[in-house]
Image (cartoon, rainbow, N blue to C red; front, top):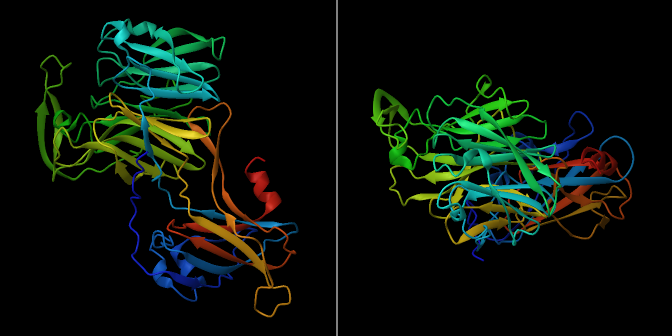
Length: 471
């Protein structure tokens, strides 16, 4: 498999052993180093490692060790130190195409449980039109569940996204292409390897004022539904792969109603400068009636065909990425991240080539990003980058030196589907356990990195951490 290269910038530095003492006490029972100010106040050496955003950045593939001291939280019981990496996702690798044979455009992956995966795509078996539903228990063998009934093979009804809730599939499709998302709700009959679907049409659920669509739907862990849509108002979408620098977000409490009324802040807004001038273009479904847009300069990056997932307390959006000023062939996968759906997402990177129309899902412990038409898809073990170890130590006789260390512990996050959700994944964070150490009022820690950066560390009582993670 061809693994993509990390996208963040790393300093080219010689191997180094960096020591610092962190003895800062914060309000409450959790003591942490997180911001640039907190790190720099704690550091005795090596302030050059701290970026303005509070991230410690280490040289790739070089062994770098950092040391510090954190005060123990109030209470009693074993402690553990949690390590968090910056928000990024550079671990995607190519794999052969996983899609059912005979499918092509606009794929939508929807895992609803372990070994219980649905997939929707344009299917050649319907005579070149229409969208079909498929089911798999292993991401290898697909069973056809037939066409999505309300579309009746119509070539203008494009499925863009889907969600799951309480035994029902929510499949959103554009009618006409690139406009006004409609909804089909499918009740799963006899769930599992022998399931079938009974479809019910809900009609139009979003009257899109910008003409763009290609939505992503996600029901986040708080139960709110978010519809992410292309907003074509600031760009000639025809010349930019039908994508845009601006995305809209509408919300709903049930996935059916409220999208028109609940207008939220744009999750993505990479518009350049508005010129005050307007332009027009023709869409294939507009019957020669021009669509109008506001001209911006210079050339803009454009994104679309959104797909979304929540991983712990972080949210990711993947999309087609049409490079600014690029031609039809200059399209990649671009992705964004945020710690809140209410904040604007940050662009994190790009990879791949072609018009992907991606769809993301978590299946049996792995993340899959399926794309249209091509001979490949993408797989990842998760956002966590390997290459971090940690250990804890104590100064039992209070002479300023460590008397006892734990063994070095490999650090990693682990991921598990959140029960009842299709696009939410729970995270068990990377922790250093105080194995065999006596209880003390402060603990030394060391982190060894061979490239991965560190955004934050904090110390908690192990029992408190387990309660917070639901264990």
